[in-house]
Length: 192
Length: 176
Image (cartoon, rainbow over all chains, first blue to last red):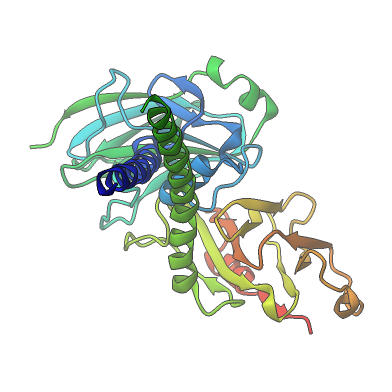
């Protein structure tokens, strides 16, 4: 009898443990699930980031609380360069692209925890007003080595993520994102 | 014995599913509870300035914006939100329920450079207390507590102090 009760308690405990672990792992292992587009190094969160799906709500609470719907803002995130190597804060990258069809846009560098890289210039992002264009093209450089212009400083030797935000993207941009030319991310050297 | 085996499998799956769903419910509520405490006192705007690189108020913060934030509590009555939409730049007011799910957003389109007035209230709340107000819109919150965020794009063509002054015109008051 005691053996049987122990066995049932074990089944219940195992069930609780498996459910708990599955929830924690699924919440933490993927930044935004249900990706609409994987385009080169960029991932775009799906329209249902504003959702009642409990897994998505949990993920957003952990990684990106206070989101807004995609017609207002689109978030593109890169965790790797154009060759598929994970982005690192101790390496230098060039991020080159062209103007986007959105009312406003910006490109921000974050550390692996989604925090800014502190720096003397207090430069954490570039946007359509602050980046220097060459025609309708732009080229930013991220990394620890100071650059004369369009430099997004990073520090430390952990991971890095880049995020592009399109504010009020055009319907055309939203509908045809997978056909758009998005910025390339190329490693240009290792910090000394 | 075979019957017990299948019963055991059924109990395991049921308990695992219940545990999974409870954990997913708990994670955002627990995190947002912590956020609510950090944003206290409730029904009061906090107007942040430019990001300085110090630990941001939220992961994936936006350095191109100045942000105002407010934790709201509707238990004392509806809230009257008033303020000014800055001209020639992006502005939005977003409302989130207690687990950070967005339920309302309005932006500067058609409101640029104009004052705004919204009433935030719970569903089924009497409208008697609102009779002296004529808001642009009455917004119903799905939860008693939640969060308000105002985002203003720091347009470098505009004077930053003007944007700050506009940001700080936002008020929240309880309508009794």
